[in-house]
View 1 (cartoon, chains in turn yellow, blue):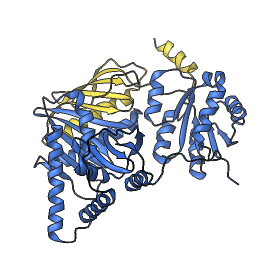
View 2 (cartoon, each protein chain N blue to C red):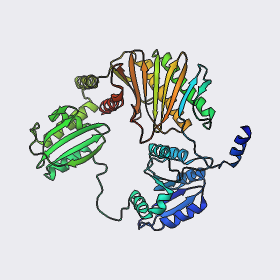
View 3 (cartoon, helix red, strand yellow):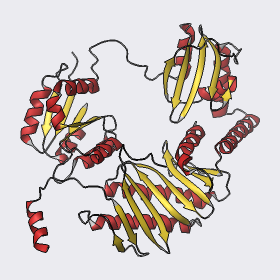
View 4 (cartoon, rainbow over the protein chains, first blue to last red):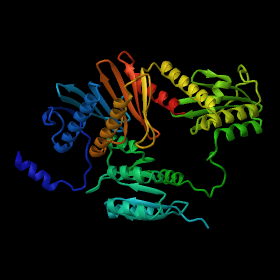
Amino acid sequence: MGFLKKITRLFRSRAAIQQLPVGSVTVDRDGRIITSTVSSTYPVELLGEIGRGVLALFREARSAQLPLTEVSVHFGSLLVTARELRGGTIIFLQPQSSLSQPPT
Amino acid sequence: METPHKILILDDDADWLELCRETFSRLPSKPEIRTITSSSRALGMLESEPFRLLICDLKMPRMDGLQVLSVVRRRFPGLRTIVLSGLEDEEFRSRAYALGVDLFWLKSDMQQNSKMFLDCIESLLGRDSDGGFRGIQSKGLMDIIQMECLSRSSTVLRITRGPLIAKLWFQEGELFDAEVEGARGEAAFRRILAWKSGSFENLPAEPGRERTIIKPINALLLESAQDMDENANPATETQFFAASHRETTWKLSLLAREGAEFVISVPPEGLGEPEAFGTQANDHLAAWTSKSLEIARRLGEKIEAGPLSHLVANGMEKQLTVLSHNKKAFLVGWTLDADTNQLLEQTKKLVASWDS
């Protein structure tokens, strides 16, 4: 497996464009990724950024005495939906396109 | 003599750039074509000289097209942009459009339909040499209304400001009805006149419509101008309180009409205090509003997910929508039973009315 990955990396074009993540991620209260169904080609650092960003949203809400159970962040091309899980969170990542349902 | 427009084409494939140069040399307006293979140098060129149009590939080493477009969108908002890519993927198309590109075209289509592609580019370059007028620029609503009256038109002027729609009915140069957000007549006309920006279109006249405005247009315009002047610069304490009372009543009625529980508007830092209606807890909510938008914006930039549209949050007791409008951050609170599918639309309407 490791050998195949090395070969693929060797012949991969340097010209690339970052795909958007699709799937779900579970993150603990310290921002560590517990489980993920996002493709392994998506950089783990960026998944970590998403986890930390979402945890920061929940944390800021708590300190504003506004405990939240769910947050959806609507970007132009990605919908990030996160549910609070006892300090951690489960995050659903869904790219948006013109064929997607209109955001709510 | 008019200087030709400049087009910058960015692609990591030098042969493709040569082909583009040859194709674009057929454009009737004979623009100056510059080509470049490096994204960072392209941004440097855009800094140093004015370009009318940037044509950009998506798949490029180091800094990809979407990253370039997100920088361009921030730094050069007036620059027109086209994505010319070999990636036939709906996701990339939507991401590019989400970044505000004017056109997304596939390289294969450009070769097959070169005439149509060149027409699109020519139109984007906006040739002035054809003569004639295209739209009205830098004209206030008062000027547009006066023009309709002076030209004795019979028409319906439909004015759009974000999600808000207003209509003014003219018959042979006389304004005889106005409507906006459930209000009609003179009250609606005054509210519409307070809008500072928007777009308009002329619809066919409706002569059979019931007349609600009797006053001559000049008197209405004068009264509205006086009202706006008094609201902006109250001369006496009584005028100040009257204007402030009118505004408070109007904002509370907006809240009630849209079914929202509360609204908090937060101006950019150092440009005033947050304003809250329907809640006492404005300080920490205002702080959370700005912080949450900032966190989400930073996250969007890191993961290249396109511009932030809005946030929806659910708490134990209420639903919240957060968005930014005209550099202000808005937090709107709704009851838990409010229709989730309508929240964004209602929030946008509320915020647009609020800010007018």
